[in-house]
Length: 94
Image 1 (cartoon, rainbow, N blue to C red):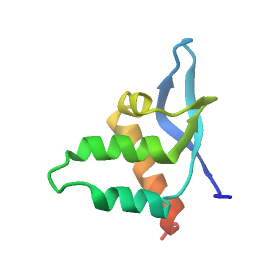
Image 2: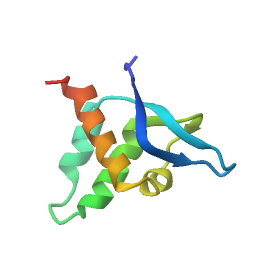
Image 3: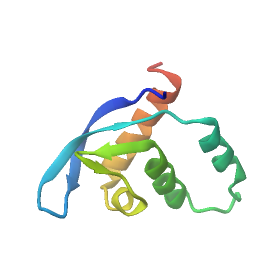
Image 4: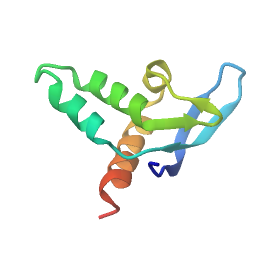
């Protein structure tokens, strides 16, 4: 079983019900994620890579499982924060 890391987003996600969610969890990169990243063409847009990578690794925000669309709708600050948390979950805090 892969361990997950908890986080609190700086901004958060607005759910369809109107609720605001900031807490969630993500899992570290797996070999499958690394293979996927390696398979991408060098010309692949970075924003699309970040969106898909976060959708793969962020398990949930609030009670909601993540999707590509929910990751795309986050603010740039929240997406950057999640990338740092993903790096930390995968490689440690240093």
